[in-house]
Image (tube, rainbow, N blue to C red):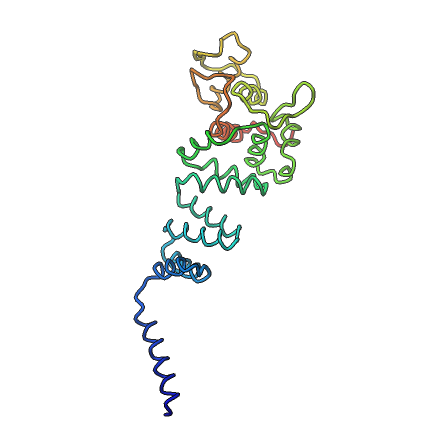
Length: 257
């Protein structure tokens, strides 16, 4: 054997041996490639490790960052959805999905991810997001899965009287929904009934036009009783979601009207 071929044989043997004696785990290899900015290789090993460890949230965060740097939006969303499936309490995961679903008019996914979110996440969402008339209509069509209405949820909700227009016939989508608004617009969708019990309230007089509708919604388990409910207070997103869910389950959203 010539000297030239001997050298190449030695080099080949060294490469094979180094590969054979590489005791790093797939995760360690992935992290090394990630730190070296070799994202495609990193993704390859992260996915390989994840296949064997599907409950590893850490790997999903690494994969999300890789895909984000690679500009793969849909892969990023897929990773966020997997984190939700793992019951993450990371509010940033839910915020990212909220923004994506909202921008892509995926209102069924928007409703689904919010209705199943942990209470700690919803508490944060109550501080971050305002329940406007427009957002409320989007949550309704998402809850009902009326895909034909996704391009114009306001039209759908007003035609079905799920949310009223103003006296001037206009719909001011950026207006915040107050607790008083929430009570009236949901009570009007229900058949008249007499509540089985009347509760004391701090801010709603028993002579107020809101009192009987509020008691009726409590009786039908649409809205929870709150002695200190302020009719002028804005509606928290978590409560809006719960009311929509209860109205849907009670059959009060009549899609055939």
